[in-house]
Length: 529
Image 1: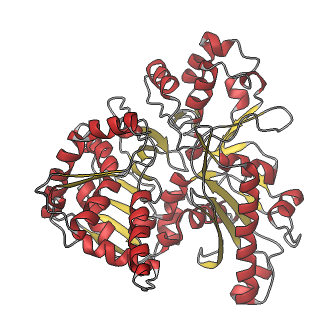
Image 2: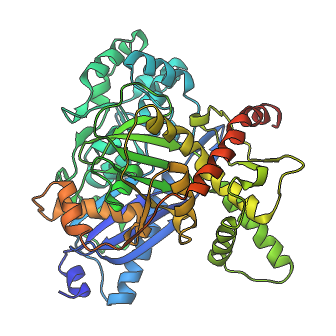
Image 3: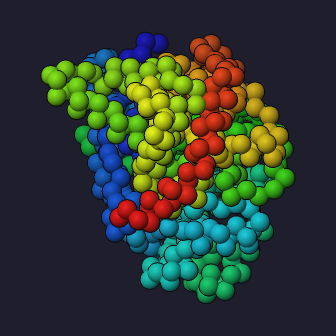
């Protein structure tokens, strides 16, 4: 069939991902090639000390992204989307969305970016003997209980942003296992929430006093390929404000951006992994065996099919680089120069490769917000150098790029040095890898592992959740790893860069200064208000 016939026959699948700065919609054919795309830009807000997005902004953004996609379908194929074979919805991971019995949100959405659950996360980590990161939903819930917040007694349902959107569009309170593993620890043998930990949590006196049971308020756990929901007619109208789209599409289990990133990079088998680098940065390494210890810097989650994954998640990545690019853009405009932003990014990134391997003594800290991996509670972007440092444009940009990767390296060194985790290759995706070779080469030095970049990865998580939708709706008989390897990525083009010894040694020298100066970063947060 032609692309137009695929769309008109209802064989296309839709994927939408709500990222930190962009909501993207992708329409794919049964062979997973992209037919059309649309997006919407949005920003989180810091309100009363909480990083949040309003639910109104969620729906305005979803509708706009879908509208842009539908417009492209009309322009490219002179047709409309009436029926879909399948759909899937993904979003930034974890956070806190508690609802009452009437479906009303009890407190503004608390995103992954907040670092306000330290006590709750620490106590649960000790209770479970399992690392509970601050951004996980269960940490937010327990912290709210510790704070004696008035809403906690009224909770009837707790979910994530992806789970919320899925619920509104399908009526089903479910999550894919990868996303669920960021709400509450998962038993990778039983492929469900860990029963022992559920009982331990329920036995906490302050929890036992609640009128609800933890399992009853958590979403049901599903695996990739499960056909657990369909798009309702009401959901279709909520998504497509023109009323053209009809309900009935199979909707795959909702996943977080970590799971969709793994799918988008074919990183679901042991000894593989991926790195998503944008506003935040995180690595996902699929393990051959369980870790021997509990590490506060490493989160144990799963692939969308339930395999154990060691995740290092850092709240900060490219925001400070973006700020410097805006400064250089302002400078160029002051001379009457109109440089396109992609060209400016490419030039500045490429300049970083001309710098000294250790950044010439220039050290940067990219903390817009707190960073649990490095024990920094509040963000204060900072640039430090000794008077005799080689302060040049190349070293500045190299230091900023190293800074965007430094917290990730800080956490992953535990896997390589203490657990001897072997990695054959990591696949990178996200804005940091858009400029050819630069981010890829420096990340290889940070991770001391080959870094691959695929052409398909440019579509990111929206394409990844669309692939999961097709996997659920297309009656594929293989396992998810087999489907990705044998069908989706069998002809995929990718480039691989091995770590260069000089870059590795230079990054190590940078890290010595970076780690030594973390106390100054913490003091900056205390003193600069």
